Length: 362
Image 1 (cartoon, rainbow, N blue to C red):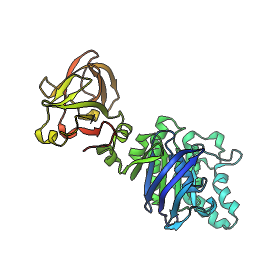
Image 2 (image 1 turned 120 degrees about the vertical axis):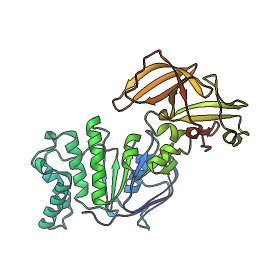
Image 3 (image 1 turned 180 degrees about the horizontal axis):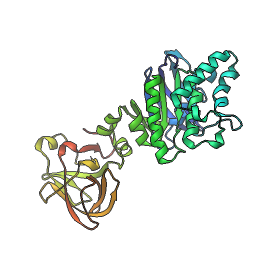
Image 4 (image 1 turned 135 degrees about the vertical axis):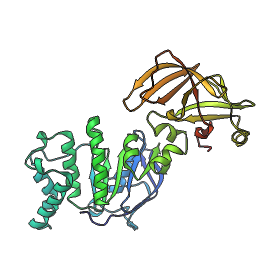
C-alpha cells in the first residue's frame, strides 16, 4: 500500500523560543520501516521535534536528513510526510468518502481510477466501508480518528507522523486504537513516529522508545530496555504504572539502610563492594519485585494504607515509618487496610541511582 519508507536522522538539532531551549542538541536515527515513539511529560520538546521533521518548524541549529538527504530547509509539501494530529481536522461538510478523496483530487495529478483504487485500499485497511456516506458529526471519536488515519494512508507517504492522536478518546477506545496502530504498521511497514505523554502507549506500540525531558534525550531503547534497565532516575520513575519505588539509602556495615523506613536490608559482599565509595544512593524497586513474606532480617515491616483491586492485579499502598511503598500482588490475595505485612526483595531486582545526578549505577 505505502511507498518505500524513508529513514529519518536528526543531527544535533536544537530549537530555541525567545531564549529558551525547547529542544537541546537532539540526535536521533530512525530506520526505514521502524515504529518509534517519542514519550515524555508536557513541554519536553517531543511535539516540536515532530514538527521539525514535518517541516512545520525550522531548527535553530542542526540538520535533518530524510533517506540520507539534507531536508533541513525543504518545504513540508516536498518531504512526502503525512501527519495526524490530536484533533481530527476533518472537513465537516464532506462525507467520509469525500474526505478521503479530497487531498488526492486537490493535487490534480491522479486519475479517477487511481483515486478510486487508493481509496478502496484504504477503506479495506481501516474497515471504513459502513461509514463512507456519513459526515464527521455522525461519527464516534474512534471512527473520526480512523478517517483521519485514512486521509494520511491514501497519500501513500514515506513517513507517518502522529502527534498525540489518541489523547481525546476515552480509555476503551484508546485501547482499541492502540491495536489498530499496531496492525496498521504491520500491514504498511511504513516509517512511523508517534508522540505521546502516555507511557502505556509508548510501551505497547513502539519498536523503540525515545524518552525525553527538558528538551533532551534521556534514553533510547526497546520498551523493555527502558523498563528493565532505566538509564537514570527520570526514566525509572516515568516508565511504568505504577512508577518505580525510589528512595534514599546509606551503605552501612549491615548493608543498605533505608533512611525514611529506618530499616536495614542486608546485601551480599559483592553487591556492596561495587559502591563502597558512595555513602548514599537512591534505591529503585519495581512494585512487582516486592514479595509479601514472613518476618526476617531481609524483610521490611509495612502497614497497608490503601488497596486498589484492578482485576488482573491488586496494588497495595503501604507505609513503613516515613517511607511509602507500592506493591503489586496477585488479585487472589486477600489483604485489609491497616494490616501489617513484611516485604522482602532480591538484591538482583534493586536499581541504584546516583543521589546527586540521578544517573543509573547498575
